[in-house]
Length: 226
Image 1 (cartoon, rainbow, N blue to C red):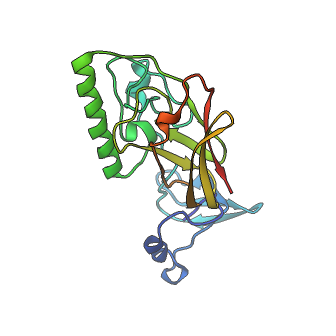
Image 2 (tube, rainbow, N blue to C red):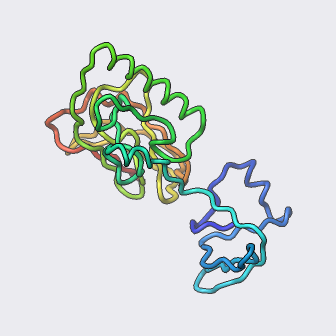
């Protein structure tokens, strides 16, 4: 197993499955730089710490760093979030095109199935509300994230969130004992301890702070204090 990050990113029980006693090597701070073979894979070259190493193998599996399956969204002219590469949505899962909603892994790549299903259920509530009123207000400002955070969904201020809604974030780097903070200008709207943040794992942010947003209060940003 090869990762360009400094340590393992999976959960404890799965970490046991790749321990050295089971003869599964885990190479950190490394990357696959070349794949050898013509009719089939014969090996790979690994770059690590300025040195290279060839490892013979017959299969290469790529995982992590997923992006949404967004071809239809682009063909439909929806506004695309530059960080997630999925359609930009507001708290009601509305896209930039009236009558079009998006939810689940169309928004943020690989996510747990239960999370995607819950987003679909909430998006359906928004669809019902739209069909009864047929109102579609414009997007509000974007919500930005500060490094090492990678992206947030939903990423646009718009209609108020549905009950028990949560926002989803991911980080690009490990952060130990961090505090997630939502700010608008010089005001802190929300802060919560998040412990250790791990790349490729989702962080969930409750939406209770959203009513305190001032529509004329300037841009909204989310960052991590350590």
